[in-house]
Length: 107
Image (cartoon, one colour):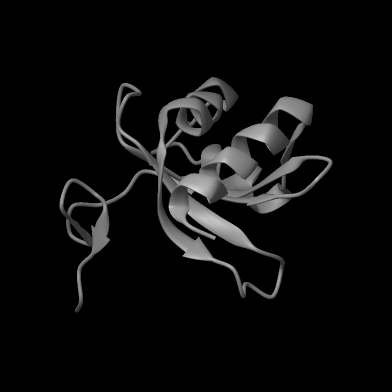
């Protein structure tokens, strides 16, 4: 599945329901992040898939980057037929990413 198809499935799943997994809630709530559900929704609506993980043991998932929010955000999510599971969300670090947070630096 190409990135555009993955993003379309993510958006269709999100329209039905967004489920924030406990790990995502913990990561979003860290004092140095404080990522809101609104920012996650904006990332889903305006972001782009930059990595796809079709073989993820938890189920197919992907990494979305959104730079149209007030700050860059990465969201890892897993689209299902009935809902979109938000696995985690974080603020990408320039130390770890190239190309405006789109490509991982090889360390």
